Length: 117
Image 1 (cartoon, rainbow, N blue to C red):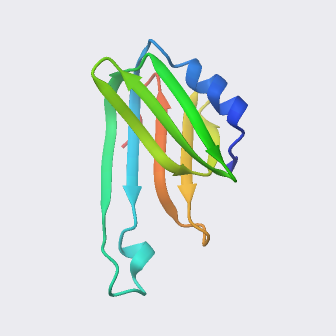
Image 2 (image 1 turned 30 degrees about the vertical axis):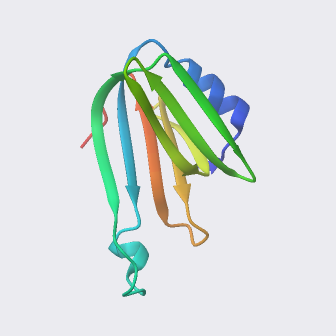
């Protein structure tokens, strides 16, 4: 993965607009991130291969930390704290947010085909 380039990621997001796509969204500060802090709460969310159609996509941010919002007919999906991106298997957009120690905190992935399990 490489640091997010806003213009490039925006262009890729626009390519998924008005299409039925598959979404993976994950947040975590799970046990692997908090194992040395017994006072930390473990939280997370995980959605994989949810089929969505969004009509608007926007990436915003500064200082190498970004948020992506996807507007659907009846609401929004967004991921915040994104730092890195790549294209996987030729067409799957993978966005991730890593903490200062390189641990995964958030992941947003979009594809026209389902993700593997």
